[in-house]
Length: 92
Image 1 (cartoon, one colour):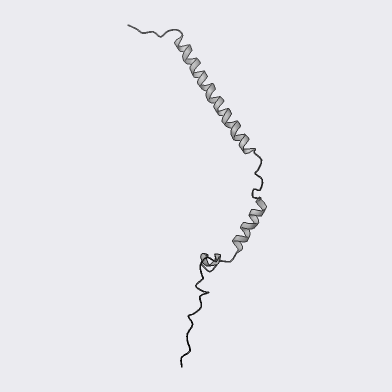
Image 2 (cartoon, helix red, strand yellow):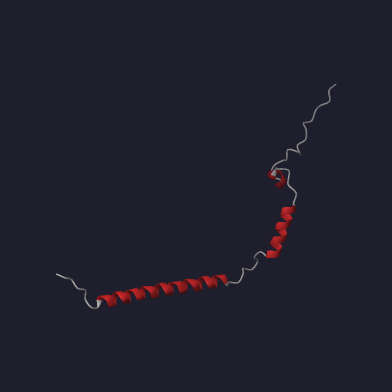
């Protein structure tokens, strides 16, 4: 017994394949439109200016190295260099 497919089955498979390909193309087109509109968006007001950021970065690079105590430089903790020697009482 030889099972032969119906004559309309190959045409139906072709239709399903073409519809699938068209759906993928439409999804790619929609994604492309969304991404391109996001890249063309105007910059947010108050955003960083490139020349100012470059100037700040260059001054940070040129800044001398600190004492190695970042907390003391921020003023959060006393620096070990600023600690005074304990007061001594004169001996008699």
